[in-house]
Length: 153
Image (cartoon, rainbow, N blue to C red; front, top):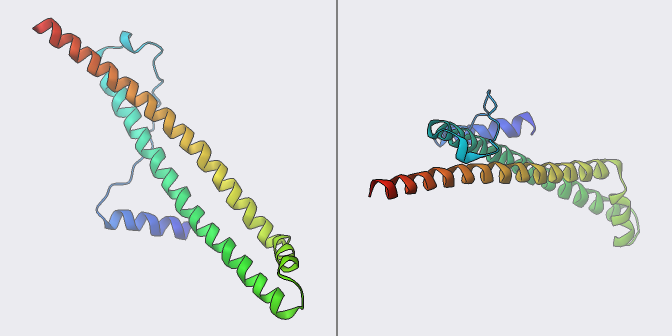
């Protein structure tokens, strides 16, 4: 995200009194068998994957915000160029649109928008994966709690 956009978005979040999600320095690998993990370690995993979900969703929101601005920039660029072409030359709207769409600036903006959309797709997939891991750990904790309640009854 451009520095100015990023700073404005972050300033907005902070002005609302919200804490910005942070990435984690340490890496916790998802266990192959949750049932073999000690209950204390499950808590560590739950905390880790919940914070990773939060962080990646925050990153997705920043990319989506930048994408909105880039799409607007692309639309404005196309509109201005189209208006200029049609005003200064006696050509049809179809020909003017074709000419505008083939300009280097518009092509670069379209590529940038496409790259951002691709990045979002990947980030959303990562977020889904983190959420699935977080849910699995939460279910394991609930399962153990139910087993303990049955034993205590």
